[in-house]
Image (cartoon, rainbow, N blue to C red; front, side, top):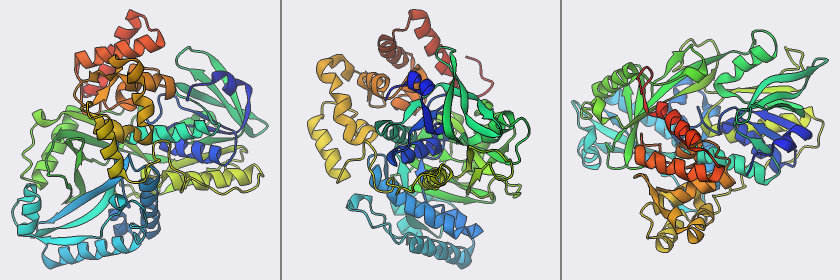
Length: 543
């Protein structure tokens, strides 16, 4: 997978997809698998924003039942099973405990009814060949048994806890990149760090986009019969600029922050109800993720970040509703913020606003041919949204309908029959690598391709920091996965920065490896190291 700027500048494609988050990645993959010629461009790196900065859950949306969004929940539960099957290395079952502290029998009865309906709607959760990927139904633990399973639940008035299951992504950014990789393996021409600056318009028709290469500053046009905008939180801003006026299709942006702290549970996730909403305690890579806030964000999407006030307020919220947490600022190892792009349905409250998606054919309303926008939606249902988008594209282009295969086709690292056996084999073959479980989860059936680099260059087996990542991943990221910056390598091709600042030595080693691959000068290498520091600092904090 390499940037082919020459091809992007020369060909006329069936589809140009603008936006390399999970929505754009899924659309490009689906279209390429159906035989369309596809171009995919992303102004930063693939999955650099919302698609990576989330709770890392593939879930049915249990709380959406409160709003009677039955069809969205059912779609999400179906898609959860599909992700488990097509990417078993990156998506796996996760048990959740929902403690009940007050409210008496009514609270318990309401939760029991909701979880029973959730189980009913996920009737296909066991339709997987791999027993390790099947999800059980819910059950109830009394207070004594709940505390025996998870002491962290201890608190005044504990009545017990419900246990239910959803699924977790080991690395959402890697899952999105595998979608891009699969698109490229099937003929898509993709490029990151290539910004669509404007749309090409002629006689009321969109014919592609003018783009700028952030690496060289070069500008050129990409031409396509149909352009699809999948720009997440940037979508309405881009539309307003490109169409020469305020777009009638509005988004509300919801800011969600997450905190990474030392492990708080024995292995279960916690869903803790609060007066206004809920929060999660999610076990992940030997730590816990606390998530998430849900507040309206009115600034420019590029400016979103985490402030010290955000952290203080969220820790106070968690401590108030889970007293056993007793969290302090010093416990926070890492933090990140993402923006949910929500369709403005007039709800006025980001927490209750629907997570539905909207697919817009701009021939209707705007009178502009050749342009489709995809706004809203959620990670879990991105594949299904892509299927609907490509169905629309085929009709718009007057092409014969072709069946979508992404519900069955495994992702490049997903060719695994039994995940437990795969992990056992990986440990047996590469037990000398302390981080083999981590590497096997990141790459799945592509693991040997990555580790083959260490056969010819043993120094590439050198560990980077304490996360289990090795230098070979950076070389592989440059050669096979379009890593062009140190941030690309540290935050999305490896897990080196996912648990917080990996330290000066690890960053310098990573920079040395990628500099050797890309031919950077010492000045460029130092600049890359300096530029990554903002990720590990709160907004307003000086370097």
